[in-house]
Image (cartoon, rainbow, N blue to C red):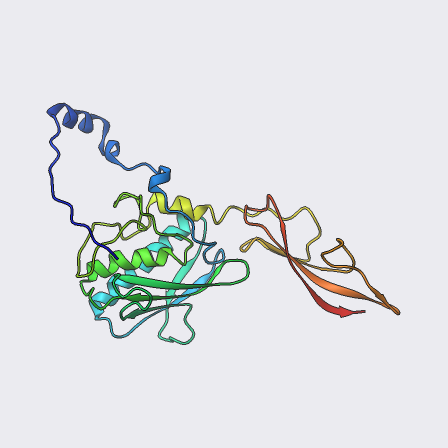
Length: 268
């Protein structure tokens, strides 16, 4: 990671500006969720309503642990009320069985960054596992919180936002190594929630037959014989017919359904 030093400066505003701010309120200074301040999407995040077990390595001090755990709690709160994902984070001492692991160790892909997260996804592009490595150069609990809230955003489906203002998104630019605070939020912002929300529209059931419909993942599994040519074909073998478990998925709340797979289940 390259760092750039910017000389400090102080902007002088007129007394009239101060009066306008007092009259209209501090929201005049708030950063809007413009495209530049909205983090882009990385993938589809955890499946809706997923309970994610989190293991935080015991090498962290109690203060460091609490700072990191606090950012997971902040994401849980946002997911419950602000972005419709309903994803929750719970803590476990079982490293092997955890869905999300956090270690205090140098990143492997790029050792010169404060944190790095490896995300594993399933066939529907939903997160199934994440591992974060927080660089050992970062020891201040406040800095670890600033880094961790960003790293949680990746398995939530968010990419880095190089154009975001510091206060607009947890996915904005970080700082060079060495316990530097940049003032990034430690809870998802309205701009972050707006992006996450796009992954979790209210799913409308498909207009066709569906034996097993899951509103959380917006998927449909249907046990069928015969059907669309080129997708799965009916075959008569003596007195039985081939049956397939056909899966469909929607990425826009059920407005459009896409064929995903057809698995042969038997002939009867």
